[in-house]
Image (cartoon, rainbow, N blue to C red; front, side, top):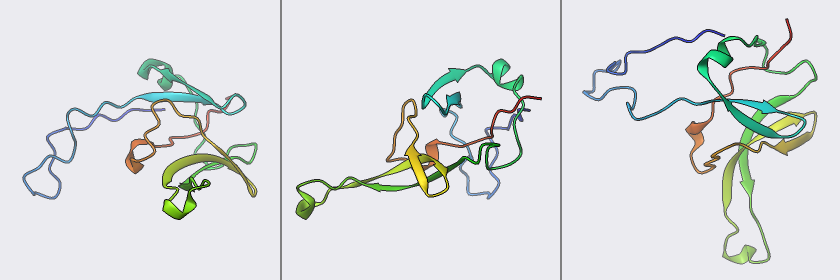
Amino acid sequence: MSINYLDLRMDSNNDGRPDFNKEYNVRIFLHDNKKNESREITEEQAQKLYLSELITSPEGISVSDGYSNNADILFLFGGGSSYEHYLTKGNKRKKLNLIDDNSYRRGNFKFIGWVINK
């Protein structure tokens, strides 16, 4: 894994506003698929990992996202929905339990790869 640092003052579309929010902090998490748990790791720990370039794990699992309907007995009044992330294999999917999962914000999660043994 390599890390590329960006100039936070960059304004690629010349609209007078920086492309990046200086207050945004990148956090890296390592997810255990079997336990469905995540733990935060440091940049140094992340750089020691080997990541697969494939979007599907060697076990045939992929990460997907989409809306989840929260229908209940009061469906007439709107059960609501939320944007979630899932582990998917075939036609089965399991909601990812993420730390600080703000399901109402679609851009707060970025899958970067599967950890593989080298």
